[in-house]
Amino acid sequence: MKYSVENNIILNNKNYIYIIHPKKIKHIYFRVKEDLKIHISAPYLVGVKKIEKLLKENSLEIEKMYEKINVNINNLVYLGEILEFIYDKELLKIENNYIYGPSKEKCDAYIYSKAKNYFALRVEQLKKQFTSLPDFELKVRKMTTRWGVCNKKSMTITLNLELIKKDPHLIDYVIIHELCHFKYMDHSKEYWDYVSKYFPYYKKARKELNY
Image 1: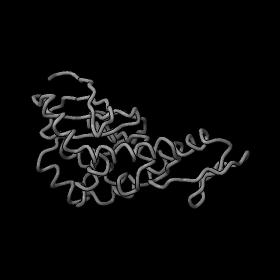
Image 2: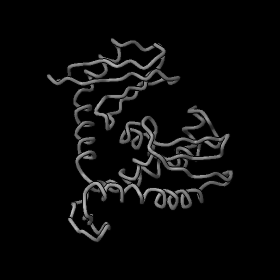
Image 3: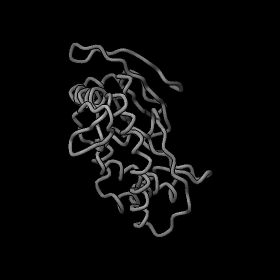
Image 4: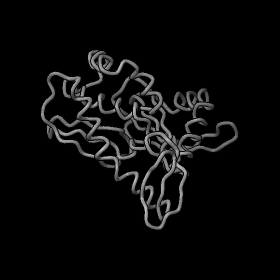
């Protein structure tokens, strides 16, 4: 299988759309995205039958993924916290577990506007753990398939704007994940050993992010 494939599957009497993204990887990963489809990263030679068998075996876990994604879609979320919307014609601010603003749409845009500064602060803090990082530029944008990208050629790290809605420890993990790529550009055992030096619980974080 060389190209992305979109299919339907019935799980617990519900119809789901899943998309297989063949990649040069060893394991299979599931992720439910904002388009409400199950996105599956899988090795090139894995067939549809094996994918569907795994989906059925993990149907309860997939339902939990949908519950989480529905929370993110229907609520205003900042750093993993669901915020209660309070109408205020003039204000745009977050205070405790409340967000004040003239509309939910403007509040959502306000949350995204805080991403670059927050990510930059965490990058500066986490960089201090490393002894030999090159100079690089931080970029932030919406991405559909990745939480972060390290580009050694352009000396940039790009973080997914959607991360601003994730728990702080998950943001830190993605930053460390990308910083470690300046030393190892692959996902070899040496790379993961290096990641674990700075983020010992990376496996748990990957599971939470459906990385």
